Amino acid sequence: MSWNSIKLRFTLPAVEWGFPVAPQHTNGERKSRGVALLMAVMLIALMMLFAADSIVTSQVDLQLAVTHRDRIRAEFAAKSGFNLATFLLSADLAKDLTIGSTPGLQKLGLGDTNIRLWDLLNQLPPIGGADSEMIQILAQSFGLNSVLDSSVLDQLKAIEGSFEIKVSDEQQKIDVNYCSSGAREPCAAVRAMLTALFSCPAEKAFLAKKRLTPMELSARIQDWVDPDSRTESESGFSDESDPYQKRKKPFKSKNGPLDSIDELKMIEGWDEEVHTVFAPYLTAYPIWKKREDRARINLNSAPRELLQCLFQDAGPDRFRKLAQMLRLRETDFKDIAGKDKPMDQVIADLFGYNKNDAGSANQADPTNKSSWFGKMSQTYRISIKATSGDTVRTLDAVVERVVPDGTAAGANLSSRAAYRILYWRFL
Image 1: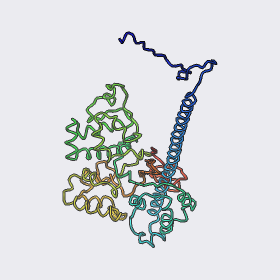
Image 2: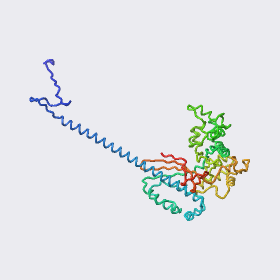
Image 3: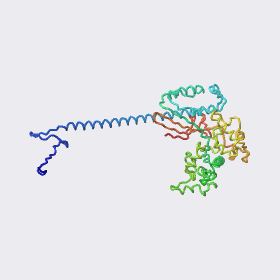
């Protein structure tokens, strides 16, 4: 038998909706065995997909709701931390104004010391609702119950989260905005401070690599901030707006106060590296309020590096003594400059500097370094890190303490609050 004699028969099966079914019966009906099972499997698969999508959607919605809840909790925890910080800053001002008269301070042996109440916040771990009793005991110890609303502690107990507070003295830095007052003497003092800061050996060598001199850089800052259009001869330019008109998008010199210290990056020669080196020692707060105001650095909180640059001729022996005093300041919270000794005498004892070294005994002389410093601060930076669940929010604010009778430091401003907000940033 040959292969050619074999007839291969191959018949395609009958189909129903694309599925194979049994062959047609003689009565004309077609069996649909298997179709119902396949349709049932398809429906079950669709139902499983729908259920899975519903579960995923529900989980996403739940996570979004939890994140939104934690975000709100963290926000109010941060604001609670800000209120606690401003409360202690105000209490610290009251302590300074009425030192020794508070029974709680005398009971704790703090009536005759210069301890900073707000500095205690920097030593505390994160605070939450469980710590409200500790704060209540603290208020009782300092005799502050008369000014502390009891409902504040009740609200603190309801906080489901925690916040960490860092308070720093903003007047431990050089305030460049005092050149915006238009007064020559305060601006000349700021120029002298900036030039001294830029003239430290390492900093001066750093600027030399940038082809800048300390006098150039300080003059350009003054040209940017001061209200007049007169160019400082040391800036290296014939017109204040010369370097900025050559930018891709030309603009003019601001001739006004800085809104923040980051604005210095717009000044010619002030790049990111320069900002990283010098920005920690500069501030834009407070903005000047009266022409006779002076930009005084708080000697009791000024960092050692800044003091070394401002008094480069003091010598290693005096700086070793200063380092010991600064360690005591950090551990015992005690001020370097007491309230009784005049500032020129404090400067002379610490650095061997006499006000007559400036060529003038006038305290208002901008070159007189003893006129650069004060013993108290009114402006502080408050940094809050609040946590709720996996959500973290940060609050950065600068406040100025205000005496309750409406008189602010260096300004006649009427206010019912114990502080003014100069800067506010919430992330």
